Every structure is written in C-alpha cells, then in structure tokens.
Image 1: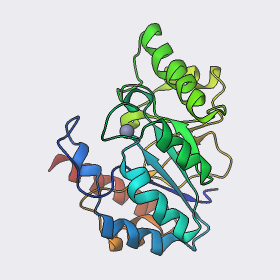
Image 2 (image 1 turned 135 degrees about the vertical axis):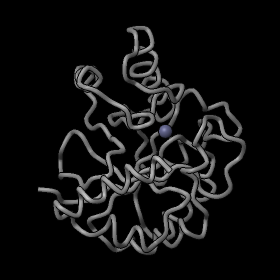
Image 3 (image 1 turned 120 degrees about the vertical axis):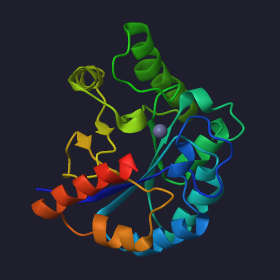
Length: 220
Ligand SMILES: [Zn+2]
C-alpha cells in the first residue's frame, strides 16, 4: 500500500547557464518554493529531497526548512564540490549539522544505466566514499541521476548495500520500500498542480490518465 509522497527539488531561484540541456526546467522560483513548503509543512505524508547539490540548497532551502522545523535528504554530486555554483564540503557539513540527511547522486551527473565497470566504480563507490569523507558518516542513500535505471543497475546498487534508492517515477511511495519514487517539481508547476495532481492519494484510473498527460507534455 502506498503511504507517502516524496517531493524532489533541484535548484531554487534563478538558474544560471545550463550545465546540461533541460536543467533550468527543474529550477523553481523562491516564492513558489516557500509556498510549497508552507503547503506540506504539516502534512505527515510528505517527504522532501533535493538533487544535484546546487548552492541554493544552503542559501535558500536550508533556512526555509529550519524555519519550519522540516527535515530533508540532499543528494549531492561529489564531482561538483569544487563548482562555485554548487555545495562545497562546508555546505554539505552545514546541512548535516542542521539534521539533514546527505545521500549520493554520483560523481558527474551522468545516467547510471549501461556503465562500464570503471565508471560504475567512480559513480557508485568513489562518489559515495568522497561524500562520506566530507560528512564523516556512511552514505546510505542514492538518487538516480536523470531518473534512469534498469535491472542491472538496481542489482549493482543492491550489491553495494545501499539502504534506499530514489527514482523520479512520479508515483506515491511505500513505507520502508528500497525503491522510493519521487515527484520532481518543475519550473512550470503551480501550487494547484501539486495540490491536485500529486498530494491526492492515487486512484488507479486517475494515475493512468496522469501518465498519459505527462507523456504528451513531454512531447510538446
Ligand atoms: Zn540530478
């Protein structure tokens, strides 16, 4: 049975030049971000996470979360710790010091499907140990870059003992499940979209309709 909904944020505020095509469509405005947090702050069904380790994680998200007494998981890119637009090691430690969980999003923000063994080691092992060296704690959770996965990848992650793996499958999640689907907020989303399309428990026909609409939206 589905029990909760995972919301995933990327950048908050104004995106800079894109580091990869489509990046800016996952940035949402600061105002919408605050309104989303206000909407879900008292909703026990909602869990929050942040991907890509943008600097807005500490500049915008952290104070807003702390102010509302909220907790979130931050999936950081180990390969961007020296990028001025991203979290650095101190930023990661600051998140942790405020009770946030730090997970891995890999090293280079590349899809994890079809990796050769050396790339898999870099993305799934080295990024994880680099982040653990920053936080001083084991990194137990991973979020899939660009949401892509297949059975081979999932068995690689299982073999490495990850406690949880977070996708971008836009579905409700089950408590304790190893695979956690998430809804990513997008630049074009509104509070009404969130209220009506995401936060209502899924009824099967509506969910199928949503997936069709989502498919059409992506073709526009
Ligand atoms: Zn990402």
